[in-house]
Each structure stands twice: as structure tokens, then as C-alpha cells.
Length: 118
Image 1 (cartoon, helix red, strand yellow):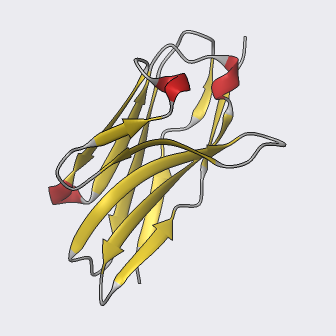
Image 2 (cartoon, rainbow, N blue to C red):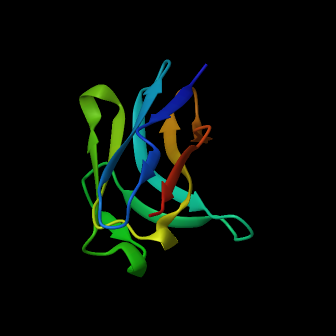
Image 3 (cartoon, helix red, strand yellow):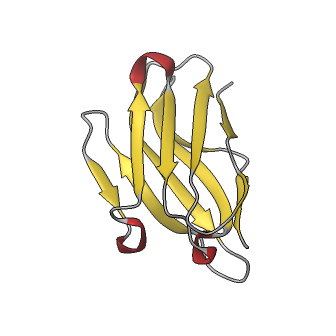
């Protein structure tokens, strides 16, 4: 049974930083793409950033230059370093991984709340 567990969310003031982590556990043979999504109240879930198994990254325009996605393949863990946070970054952040156990399947974490407010 694969589980994705997120951590690192919280309440910060505008301009501050947070680091999110997502660790995958279970009988995992390979993880292709790791990604962070977010969903703000009343809005659709959007892709924030993704990283492939060879390190290719992609970011939504609104976070370019402020957020950095990274991964530790040995630990099956992904990170999102978020700097210069703004109120519009407030959302529930979800991790997402496409990985191989007995077949290729996409898994989601339970979500972690990030609130940016003065």
C-alpha cells in the first residue's frame, strides 16, 4: 500500500518562507513525475510545479522565481521551497506522484494548508 505524507504547511506573513515535504512509502520501484498542486477556496486545483525522474522542472508562471521544487530519489521524497510568499499563495497544497509498484499509478497526498496573512 503506497502512502504520500505531506508536512511543512502553516501560517506565515507575506514575504516569509515555507518548505513543504512529501514522502512516499510502500513497495515502490520507480517514481516518474513528482508534482505539487494547490487549491484555493472557490478555485480549481492547479499545478504549481513538477519534476521528472531526470530533474526536469516546470512551474506555473505565478511562482516562477519564488518557488523551487526538488526531489531526493533515495528517500522517495519531494520538496517545495516557497519564498516571498503572498496572500494569493494561500491554499491547500497537495503532492502528486506517478509511480510504479505492480503497475504505473498516480497517487495523491492528503493535503497541507498554507496560509499567508498579516
